[in-house]
Length: 165
Image (cartoon, rainbow, N blue to C red):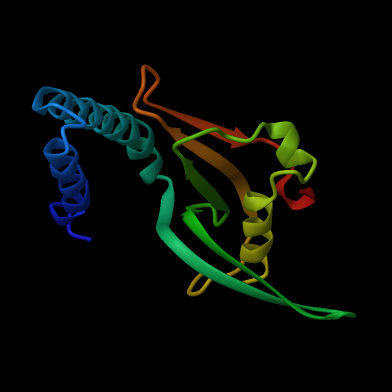
């Protein structure tokens, strides 16, 4: 969606709430300013963290859909995913990044298989299940928490042996 059109639903809801008297113009204006401030803090953090990383990448792929069909004794099982971001490093290894605006699962949960999203996406990439991407070793799994708060963002890498997850 075009950036200016993305605001339309937010503006419509705001106008309805104003018309109903739920919020005053001042409250609505304060909410917009607060959200825009969070967005600016996230954008600044993102540029500071991601900018230097770009030199070490061959490519970066966003919102990549994948599908992996696995034949089991009980029948065909299909695993589907949409990875927020998959980066290929210059050394040929891959990194999978998941953007989070809420909580991030603890490393222990990922290691124990209780938060399997990124390890499953890594297995899918290794199996060639993401359209248009070659197979390869996944070296890094990371959650990028984007809050816009005092700490606008945080890069939390899973340092486990990705292949064993």
